Length: 172
Image 1 (spheres, rainbow, N blue to C red):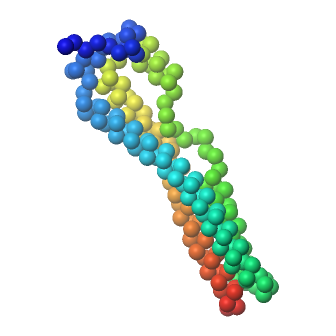
Image 2: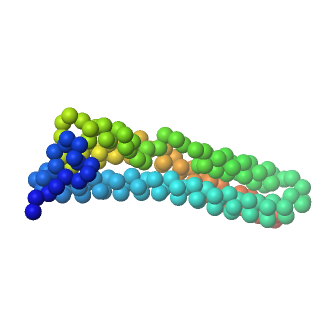
């Protein structure tokens, strides 16, 4: 049975024959898309974790800070407040909107480059080019690592903040 071009391939481009559709290219493209999707999920996950960090920080500071400040301001109180401001700054850094992440392609550009062009493009060629572009997009999204580091530092600050409040309460 002969393959017929789908609706998207009938605009003057050659139909992909079985020889043109390399399953290795399909697999590589699929893995590239999966990697980019994982990167996008990581950014969304960091925002969720930042929200949880806001709650944990507010809860710990309202509970412990109230008890500690009843005795007046001491060194540990000032350290705890400084750590609270540090956590707040890191949370703002994590939640600040970044519009420079690249997680998808421009459909108009894809149509122009692969469907409406004068030269026919095979699926394997298209998947190869898009997989390489995904790799470049993933590399350009390097700021995601800064979010992870900011979260780790904020969590350490939260632990030190709780410790400082406890030491202030104990009067050490």
